[in-house]
Length: 485
Image (cartoon, rainbow, N blue to C red; front, top):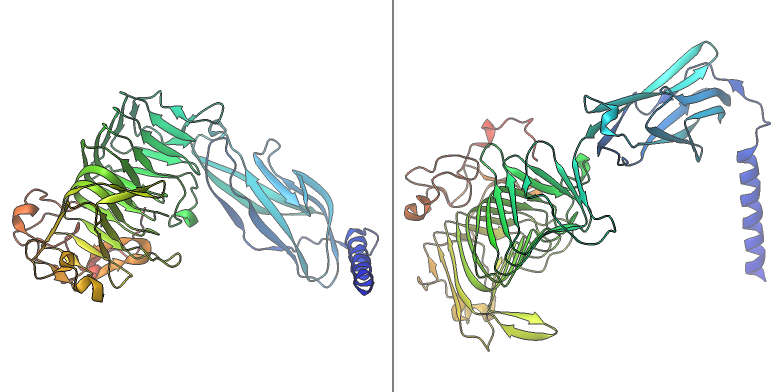
């Protein structure tokens, strides 16, 4: 009974408040045109043509000692592609809007702009605040980007009908796109491909993928959220999925904010990854099961699980930088995980690890140890080696007794620098260039460096090259206004 009375009192109070907030009969003064605003110009995020921006807010302040009435609030353009919401009501023009003394109101703004509405890729309008003899305004600005939309009419998975992507304008994929069996997809230098939430690119059995980026014209795969606030948000799309018996050659590709950057399943054909970068994976940078990969100048940054998760197969990594400084929560998995089995329906399946060779590579991260050698008792084949690498490895007692972790065995660990300083420029934003204090400077194996004479940003590797995907630089020489992708 007492609880019932409390509910009655709360309901009565809410009713009084709502009646008071809706009243129009208390005394107000006509606005004198001396409003102030949270911003003079409201910049909305970049948006694809015809799609809606996110909703942004503008705060309007009444600094006077009296309640005021604004005769008209409206959008300047009669055919405006902006939408505004004032006091919970959506529209383009509002009359007699009241703001109490020393109070404020919110106006919410969004836009959907067809590219044809603006030839300069910038769409503008103004919100007008009209009073007697005076008009104040707030400018609205949106960058509109024209794209090729690729999607299924019924929302299901779909095969790509286009066989070549160019840099003429970006592509936006909505849904799971596949290169069909025996199909072929070529992505030319400078192309940008956006993927919506949960979207992916699948290379079906027998299909081919050629990503032909260049040093000065790389290719970018990323999400459809274009605002800069999403630059470092993991898991915005589902990544590239590679089926068996495919042909995949990748050069100068940036994979930004996927769930798993590249997921390879039972593909014994050699996949080449040259000058490839993967950042902010919500699961794995690369997950491969019974795969065959040759990678040069590979960079994998933050990943919630592992940067590299290999279960059986044959792999060669030269001049890789695998640095997992995940900062979006607690990470338990080590950055590089090598296994000779995989789990399927709660059963372990043997997957011989035929060969994994790391040369001139950095493997590190936030954990005290970033290498896991996960050998099944039921599968003997577990072959790996590290040569001229920097490796973060703090062995626990069981690992010290495990011959796989015998750091004095030069067949496994040759010229390896353990737990040395890397001196990355900025791990929070995945800027993994190395500075003057890096202890792998001039320590790479020249014979393997000659296979990749330029680092990932085009710097020549001299006769005493550095370990990792980057040659060292003096951070003081970097433009402080430089921004990342």
